[in-house]
Image 1 (spheres, rainbow, N blue to C red):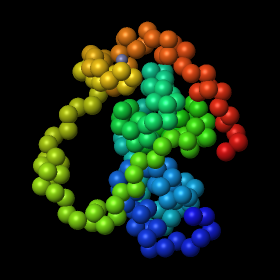
Image 2 (image 1 turned 60 degrees about the horizontal axis):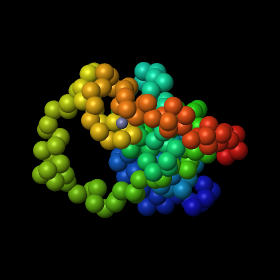
Image 3 (image 1 turned 180 degrees about the horizontal axis):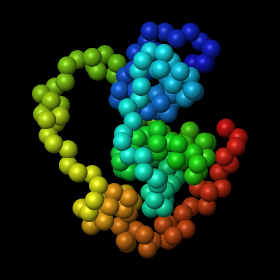
Image 4 (image 1 turned 180 degrees about the vertical axis):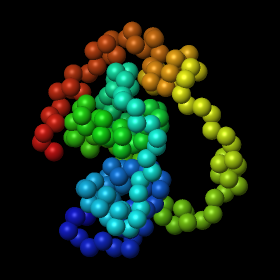
Length: 187
Ligand SMILES: [Zn+2]
C-alpha cells in the first residue's frame, strides 16, 4: 500500500487495533505498510495515540548492549525487545536507530496484525482477572531472566538483564561485526 492511496475505513480500524495492541507507531507503520510519519499523522487526526510507558531515564551501556544483541539476530520484534527492557517499543526503536541504524530497525520481524474483529469483543473472564492483579514491581533487585541464555539470575536493577556467565562469553565481549557495520544513511 502506498502512502498516496486513499485511507479506507479498514485501514483506520487496523491502525487503531495495532496501536492499541502494541502502543507503537513503528509497529503500526510496519503492519500497515506505511511510513511512520504518515501513521503518526493519521493517528493524531483520529485522536488515537500510541500509549507511551513512563520510563524515560537514559539508557545504560548494559541496556544498549542488550538491545543490540536482541536486534542482531532479527528474531525478536520491537514489542519483544521493549518488554524485555521495560521500555516502550517506540523508545526502543528510537534508541536502536541511533545504535544500529534505521535499516536494522526496519529489518526486525513484525508481530502479528491484531484481529480487528476479535478486539471488539468484551474481555474474557481470564483477561479481567489478570487486570485485577496488582503489578509486581519491575525495578530494583530481584531475580530476572537473562536475555541471552534465559536462565534466572539475581539482577541488581532493571538495567541489568544479562547474567555474569553470558557477559563473560565471546559473543558478549565482541558482538557480531555486522551489527556495527550496517550503514545508517541509506534507508
Ligand atoms: Zn545468561
